[in-house]
Length: 251
Image (tube, rainbow, N blue to C red; front, side):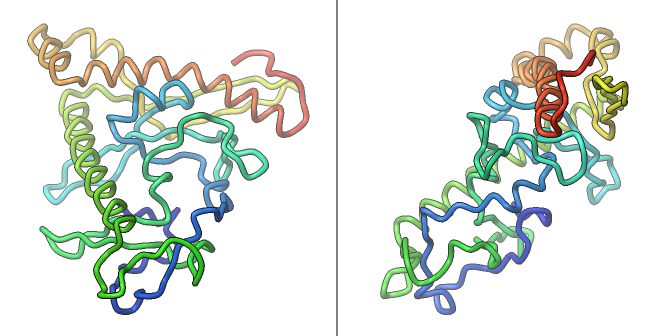
């Protein structure tokens, strides 16, 4: 999965052009990540992500048939280009979304049934020192093959997550979300643009739908999402901490 907010210059990994390219596994640069206020999480990540972040949905355009698409995201900050979960170039949370852990690599679709491994050419960890990406005969090293496998497995989870999103839209279970907090100086902090589960519509679903959603794991994802919303208050606390004021009066 290539994300334009993360992969600034994605380039297809080529066994000829990049035969001597190496990756410094010790290189650390959260400069780009530090400006992400949210990022995609797959359904399989909800259990871990809900302990660290608010997990919500956002509109994600339409599919080829013109149907509304949604995507789940972990919220990192309360304003644009603000990541409160990164401090002093380190994550202050225990779980980092899979796509960010796989960065600077990603998969790009070049044909309906074909995807290629890409890397962000702007990332500073590539050069002549570190982990070799290709063997002398041009075949991928074990490291590169493992990266590709992880990317392919994650892409499967992305598709499964898309199916869940389609179900939520089909059942009309998502509504606009707004979070408001009052800071100690009396100023207001509002966060919107997200989608949350409409509890009334969920409760009104036929028993057959509830049973089916419990069996296929969708109810588990919904519960993880609902639990995660409590992390909004922590983001407000980190926001206040970063800008030098006391804890919020209410949230």
